[in-house]
Length: 236
Image 1 (cartoon, rainbow, N blue to C red):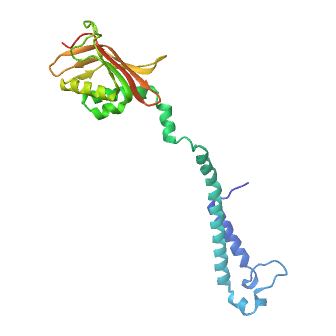
Image 2: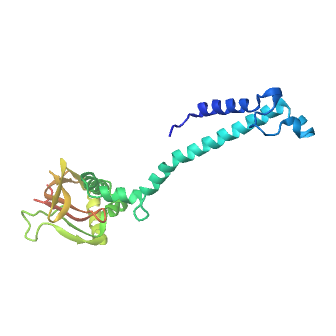
Image 3: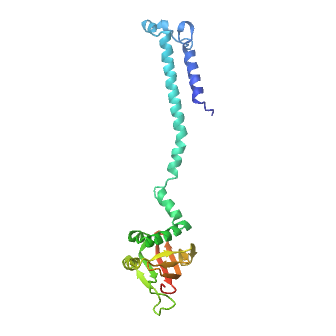
């Protein structure tokens, strides 16, 4: 079906309205056999040529408005239907987007970066925010090292309360971390990242090279639940 533009429809309606009353003597061009204005008595006298033209143009304008409104409704209906069809009542766009990106490389890197930033700024609130409630941290203190210690060279901390107390002790010593790069892994034991060439630095100038720096990430909870930061030797 051919669709006319608004300007074309307007011209057509105005032409139709003009032809409607341009009959003989200003009478309406009604079908054969229809009564003329002169047959209507006083009523016919009141329907002057000017009045007929005005009323016809008003009728044309009304028709144009209805046509345009109807065309807009028909045009917009598919768009509204498409928006409803693509929005599930069970999965919101935000949660759906988060689910798609919760386990990609950027999400894992971001979690590791937030942990290290919180540690380096001694920010307990931010640190707790990136850890699972039952997170486990295996980490060497300043005087611990896996090579020289007969007791393992690190401390195992379970849950936030133990981690928070340990972190507070390390922060009082001015401990900060530095590393060269983050490598994301995806293995049978889960997803996470290694921080390569990880080293701890203290306020007295001593340093401690980490032989193992591993962060295991939870795709379901979007946090870190197992972290290993084990030094080869005590700080020196």
